[in-house]
Length: 379
Ligand code: CAA
Image 1 (cartoon, helix red, strand yellow):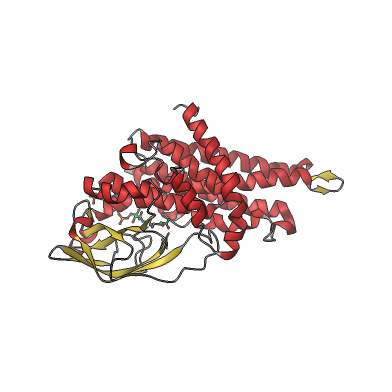
Image 2 (cartoon, rainbow, N blue to C red):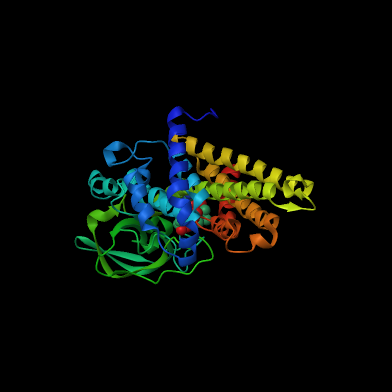
């Protein structure tokens, strides 16, 4: 495996870093405080082509590779993890299933404007009784003439209410169990489709999380994604890719924690010397730097495998597991290193610690990642 980035990838990385520093970081504190969705930034990302990075130009994308897109999520999350997940949920969970499984008409109608940043995407799988057990879908879709009628509720949906296009999973044939699940493309504004209030979260507060409520919602038959019964596989394959995105978000958070600690420990004096001169601190910094490098290798490897069209399910789960647990562990350490200051909202590490937690939960908990890794290792 080649560990060097190409010139083009380096160029993109610089662009993401500059954008994150100039456009994302200055707003991060305020939008976390207010829980305000960063529309401005999302629109700018759309104009710059970030919302369609890994899709071919034919479909309105930037024609970049997965690794480039993953570096965008990493760098943006380093500045603001809420903005990072808006990007990741849109690209990996909203656009990608249409790119991979959509008909030419679905791609033309939905993927092209989504990749151009004109429409925002989201993914509706989780339900009150179907979290880790994603196969236990209770939302029902019944074919009635030229439409499916959807009834049910999705919960904890990232970009909920803000997105224009939703990939929604529902049971079309309960007798077939997980082989009776189908996927649909649902537009915001469809009669019978409403949203719950925005959830108040511990972290990634500027991202929008809502319920999706379907009450006799008629979805045109042509909005079935893939074939009837393909839904579970579409969900699992989409999540394989999505998990690399969340791993990159966790990596960005962990890197930001290290950045803050390096700066702070060189400035902060105690006992007439900077904190960075104390071995107790140096060891924490060394562990942080090592875990972040290890996480980066796992995350980039999963992205490269995806680009090479090789199996990457296990590697994506490993990347997410390791990067999210490293982000959680080291943001806690970062608060510790900052002492009382780290507990104050004015210091970035306080937000990083709250933001890190969700990376161990969404798109499959750490326990789910271990199930996927064990399943692939033992089969
Ligand atoms: N790719 C293709 N097919 C797959 C697959 C994959 N990655 N994983 C499983 N499958 C197939 C299997 O091959 C099997 O098919 P066959 O019967 O034809 O052999 C079928 O799916 C069932 O597989 P399992 O028996 O492994 O399924 P399971 O019911 O035991 O579930 C699970 C396994 C890993 C726990 C799965 O349910 C899972 O991933 N759960 C977590 C769900 C999740 O990640 N939710 C996140 C919601 S989205 C989100 O969080 C978004 C956000 O906010 C940003």
